[in-house]
Amino acid sequence: MDDEDSPPPNPLAGVVFDPDTSRYVTTDTYAETHTGTKDDDAIAQAMVVYLLYRVEKGWGNLRSFQALSVWMGKEPKDNDDDDDFPLENLWKQDMESWITTKQLGKTTMAHPDNWDQFPRFYYEWGGIWARRSNSMRSKLHELSEQACIQMAKHLSDDYSILAAQFLDYALRDKEDFGNDDMKGLADSLYQSALKEVDNFPKTAFDDLFNG
Image (cartoon, rainbow, N blue to C red; front, top):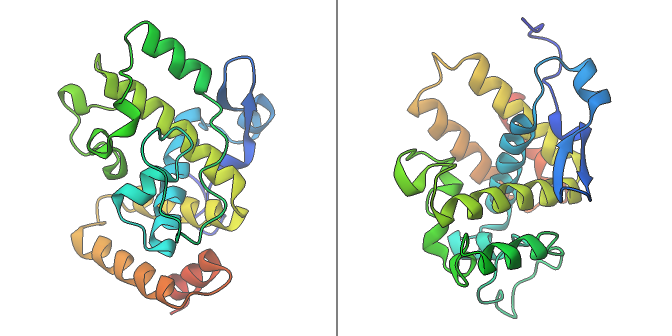
């Protein structure tokens, strides 16, 4: 077991984009020195980063989906003050191919309802809402996970480090981590976001662990 005083694993630090597969992958050199690190660990971490950024920005569901580079619906309103997102869609060729072969619908990536389970970390695992299924939402989930990594790699490393702390805390103490803990965590993040500081992750970390 890891030393409780050691920093938690940071899978995103070892992730690179493979142009041959058009996917973000964990490098062999990182995996060799971080036993147990897999691509799924980086995906989970990136999804937490995505939610952290959403809290900081005060985004509702629609705007948070519009921030993903694979979103194909209406653009954010002109008065949106975020110039960073969405980034370049690195999966456009995959999407076009899947639409041609009817693995993805022309409007699947344009309707916010199709992301229903994504920001909930696939809370409802069954049927078409599962992380991976035979439905078109499975392709949406796959691409959205990749877009989250793209976003996380674009942002400051502070977001990834804070996300790693959250995951480590929740998994290490999973038997004792309940609804009250989740509510306290959410309330603390919300109060940190209201401060509108230059470095939200650092402020959120200080508020959570030093408050």
